[in-house]
Length: 135
Image (cartoon, rainbow, N blue to C red; front, side):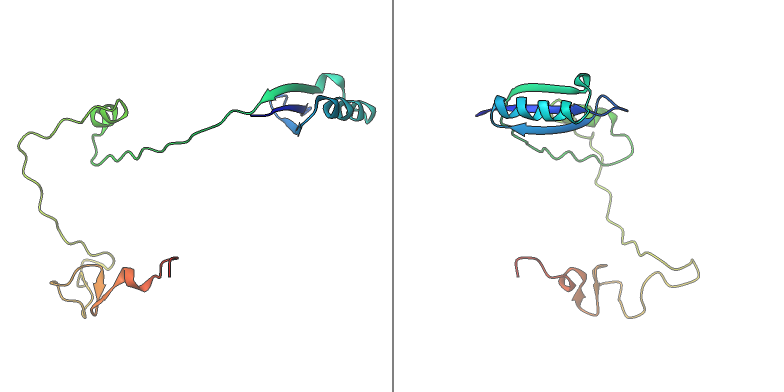
């Protein structure tokens, strides 16, 4: 990586913030600092750094937690240890849930039978109504 010179002018109100200019040559940074001082910027607000840019690699690891008590399981996932399996508990049966309406109304659309999948209506799958970007 090539070396660069960084000129930072600190903000008056918040010295943790400021304006940054990245230059290729130290002589360019010196000229910029001269111009800043001549324009009225206080010398105390100007910082000049000789920097080498470092490469960065970003990796994302999905973490999924289900249920109300995820304290012990989430700690095991972050430490790359397998979570303990539940002790011989049977899997719960899936239950169809229909949204909307009051208790007096039917929990599903009259045109939709209970045997249909919840995400289908009149033989049309809900997801087919959206086109992908690949088309």
